[in-house]
Length: 207
Image (cartoon, rainbow, N blue to C red):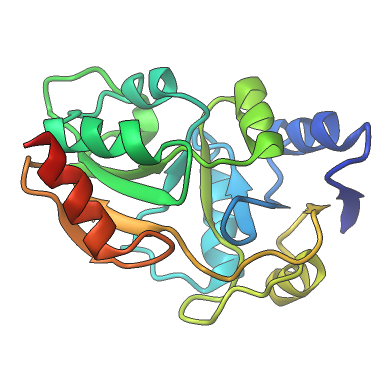
């Protein structure tokens, strides 16, 4: 397992090359360390499930670098989603979008009715996704366990399925807040860095 520091000159090209080679990598985010792979690589996605011992029926969340990348997935962007994105993206907010059957979408989303998406506020990760496109990124931990605050701890828990570790030191263990925005009645499904009250206040101001 290789390791680079996030500030190393070769960290960005090394991470992009590893992903394009079909590897699963540990990356820093603005919340916790994440386990990342290219979404169109079915074998890499399978290794994420193996590494985490994640149940197969749980779809992997997706990170994007921009709203253009989000819209390019064919999601239905409701008024609630636009309001929350304007306030909290980039940032620690994950939103569950609907996928209309009539909309064009990448093949790896075929058969899906929804997808969880986030634009993180992390310069390295945003730069990486501008090179690779959107990524499958889930917390770097065993399913149901807490996410280790350091890259080394996360990688050791997920070995031998990780090919590269991008180390950014100790990170906050607070996850993103998860909000379902498939309709204009947004539902907070997991409270994280952003409180339910803050979500409700933001939506109330736009009503």
